[in-house]
Image (cartoon, rainbow, N blue to C red; front, side):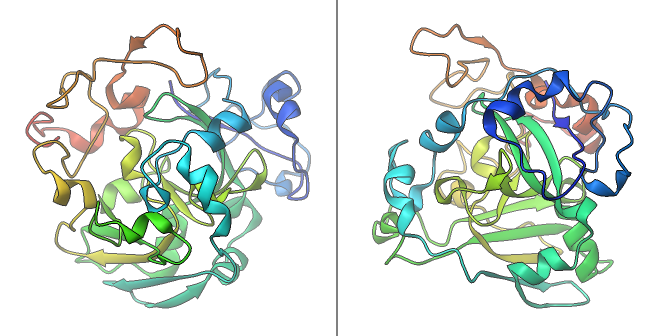
Length: 305
């Protein structure tokens, strides 16, 4: 499977969840990569990543989460994340960039065209959940701050605020949560910064107000509540690789031929299908091989897991 890109007429056209699911019947022939009202109301061609995939319910997406800053249980983020303050919010962008600084969320969004910041697609997540994300391409943000020629990687950090994120009072992980991508991965059009789902602001338990979405990688790569982005020429440390490098590699591409040391990754059970949902084969790169396999041409993906 891949992503569904879709185009709306105006930025103010926020689609209710029930209508979003049925919208394909109204949008046949539409669905370009950019999503906004400057299309003049004209239909555009189907997006090249477009597939038929019904999204999970808003309840599924917001009640089954991994966000250890709020606890290790799947329901802990929904239970405790409401106390997190997400406004005001700023992101420090530093390292090998031409315009380092602390950028307010509002300024990040204001500096983008409507097409850039209403970038919507329906993604199959690595834990077998289909999410209709709203947000913008990470490449648009990086291009604005000016990536310097020697940069090879992008590092990310999550907020540290134990007073509002009770899981950080535990030493289960070395806070802050850290993640990283190779620069070409970060600049790929499928790599986005999500700011919402179903046309609504991103819920706290899903990583408000800014989270990374890299749909061909396992879910823990999609770092939440981002407060720092650093361009660097060396591979950055990442939390789960630091925690257990034998089990979690830097790349963490979805690969059914590489088992986790404690379980097989050859099949998956769709979220939202109930306790007896039938498992299905895991797809290479989570179904996005046509789009991203070229990034790893010549690499040993069992060694570079």
